[in-house]
Length: 237
Image (cartoon, rainbow, N blue to C red; front, side):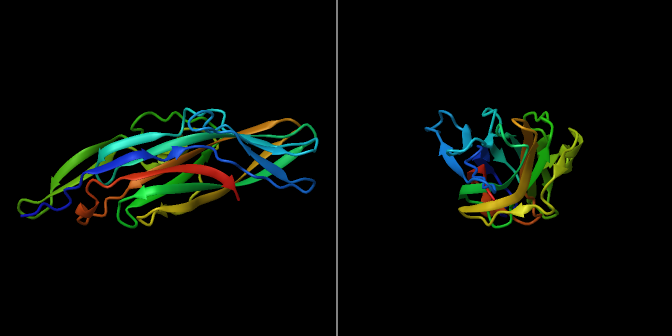
């Protein structure tokens, strides 16, 4: 008899997070975009500069080492988290700025079924301690109530919302998980505003994106050996 839910999934380079170009428009000038990335060199080092004016706002990713994870041989129920550090710096003549951004998931490959992948976004003022396999997910195999059939899945020791307990002023920005369609797509996960106060002062925030492979309690054999690949960027809202 065919085994139900005998699912072996492969996730390659999921949610490689880079801070992309952010354009900001203010009452007294329009920012121009400058992106100096070349392949992997300078990845994440982007800026917004104002042309021919005294003031400018710079949006950058100070740490390009964070924001990646690769998972393979996962079962339904698995979840991963990746984060990025974003800094907004006011110009010499700016006392305040409100930079509105979209957190966008650019999915280049998705072999999973529609609604099997769910994504949540958190924001924090703190650099949270995210260890490998933070959620503590492990494989489980249980009888499925039918002779010779077993349910292959994963159980995790930590919930998604446990991220809010790791640092002060950490909040979940998505009111409901964002579901991927099961195909190549570019989807806005959430819109946020970064506020910086004080002349030449900076505001640093951290975004944490959780990607979850749902266990539907139904046969998911169609997703065996499926892969998900893409990157999450910050874009002008």
